[in-house]
Image (cartoon, rainbow, N blue to C red):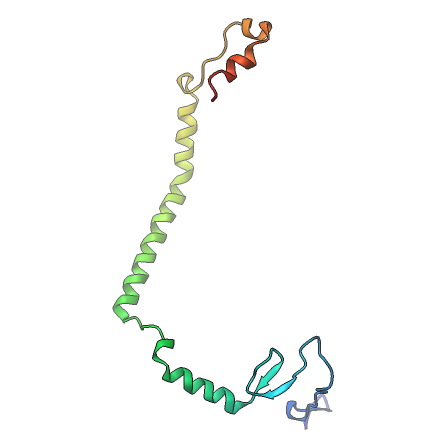
Length: 131
């Protein structure tokens, strides 16, 4: 028994679980080699599966050498550095584009007279070039 503040606390090994209840659909139905969702595996079943997996060469991927891993890391660092530079330069690029757009040549031609508007054909004139 473990004592905390003078009171006895049960150990995990003393814990009794009522297996006849369905604990939110997590009732252990069967203690064996699992076949259904709520089955619990025995240790010998788990150990057997581990051994089977270890012996299956097709279940494992090739390992990288240190040089391959370092080369991949260096490539990813370079990509990150390039993206960080673009991110840092973005405000200056945006400011330059805004400054360039403030010139009169950067804008579309305005309708000088209101004849299209007063004739009721402004919308038709604007839509004429759309296909």
